[in-house]
Length: 244
Image 1: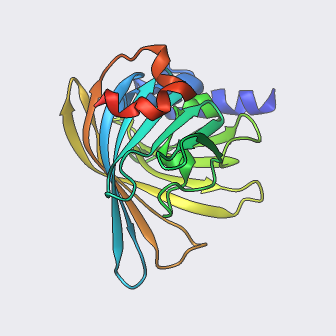
Image 2: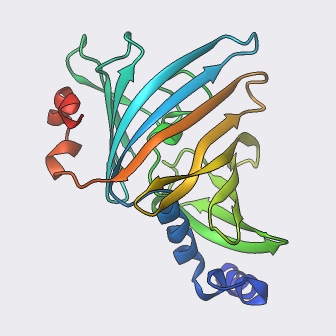
């Protein structure tokens, strides 16, 4: 009850319209929609950079439906081409053609081996995984303090800093239950992708747990697209290339 009251007081104290008119959870849902349509396809390049400057790149096609269904298909490099991933809520699988069957993976693992883990690469709507505990305002920024809905969520808490005017994330700090900082996500280079989608085209991350390492996620395309429910099943994973 106290937490709910605190949220209301913080919001009522000074958020400018239209944010001030929103309930905190509605505000988080608006931020989700500003990042992506609820159902869409995207094309991304993921780059892992090591301390000595060497790097490895991946190209990933993604299909998402609703708030918690997502399929990924690796297009490059050649060694990963044809691998596909499926996320349904908290459950994730990886299909490797040479293995021939889906393998369970976890949110804290990484199918690309970099600082982005599977929860970042196969990200759901933030509102699907987190509740808003507080909203604070300073200068032209809002800070949303988020708590994971369940223990299955990768990060116990997020501190999301948002541009008050555009309602787009600027940074997200991902924290463990102990309060330890796991990683920081930085959202950069706002781009018009068409269809009313204007959002950061680059997400950069680093971690105090892996000093000197950095990963980038560069969006080349985001577009609304509807998919049949069949796409988001284990049986469809070997056929994910049909989505291209």
